[in-house]
Structure formats: structure tokens, C-alpha cells
Amino acid sequence: MGYISVQQAAQKWGISDRRVRVLCEQGKIAGAKREGRSYLIPSDALKPADGRRLRGRLVPQEFAALFARIDSLKEELDRRRPLTAGEVKRLQDEFLVEFTYSSNAIEGNTLTLRETAMVLEGITVDGKPLKDHLEAVGHRDAFRYVQQLVADKTPFSERVVREIHSLGCV
Image 1 (cartoon, rainbow, N blue to C red):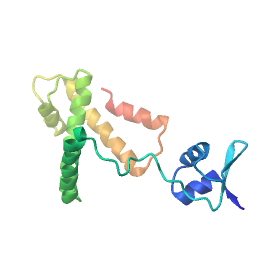
Image 2 (image 1 turned 45 degrees about the horizontal axis):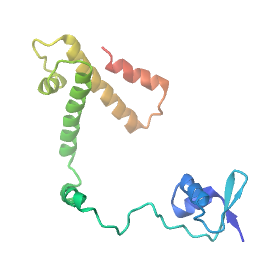
Image 3 (image 1 turned 90 degrees about the vertical axis):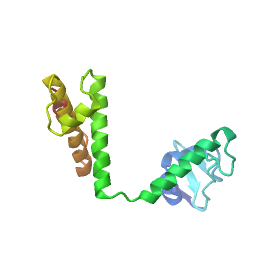
Image 4 (image 1 turned 90 degrees about the horizontal axis):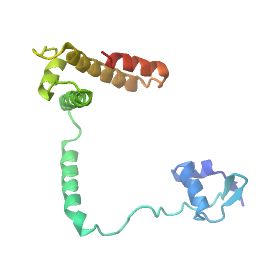
């Protein structure tokens, strides 16, 4: 009888190495044996059933209405997919305004949500400190920079953190 490694079993079954090790520790893989710090798994071993999921169980009555609402919202979302480029842009812009407002409000910024939107559009709000304007613009620039880093798949480093921080600082 031939044996395969944990990594080979994970790849064969489409699960993580860690999950295979847990299944071995629990004795759920027939014929698996521990050798030192690793496991040897029979090459003809079958993937054990995943008992972690709640398959076939009834939803408790107290959650039935909530799950029904979630299902209807999911169906509506699926009907609207895929989003057009204009819809994606609008949602991103709305998110950026709300995210900037919330992040800056936590730090004591006095701009309202509407004023934050105006500042991000390049309009100066009379009677508000310049510092508040600069914080909003800096937050937007830092957010866009992070989006670009993700799009470019730039590796995370200390330099990147410093650059992000410098954009958000007033």
C-alpha cells in the first residue's frame, strides 16, 4: 500500500493542509498514521465527509423570517448583476464619502457628511477649519493610493505603510 503526504492529500481533495491534519488527528482518515511530526495517508483513502456543516437541518423558527428576507435580498442582488460601470463608480464614490466622513469624524473632524462630499468634489466649505478640509482630501488620496496598490499587486512593506501614512497626515 502506498502513502501520500498531507500536502498531496490536501491538493487531491481540494482542502487545506491544516484541515487534513485536523482530520488525521481526529481519526477521520482511515489508515492514516503519524510518523514523527507528520502524517502518512493511504493513497487510496477517501476524503471524509465534512461534518462541520449544518446539512439538512431545519432553520429554527426564530430565524426563519430573517433568512427569508436575506434570501429575497440575495435574489434581488443576483437579478441586478453584473453592475454596470456607472453603477460601480457611483457605489465607490458613495462608499468613499461615507468612509472618509466616518474615519475623520472619529478623529474629531467637524465636517458633516454633505460637507465631506463637497470637499471631496473640490468645493471649499465656508466656516470650517482648513485642517478639516485637508484631512478629508488626504484620506481620499490615501484610500485611492491603497486601491492602486491592490490593483498593481504591490507587496506590503514598511515603505508602503509610510507612504500611505504620509498621504493621510495633515
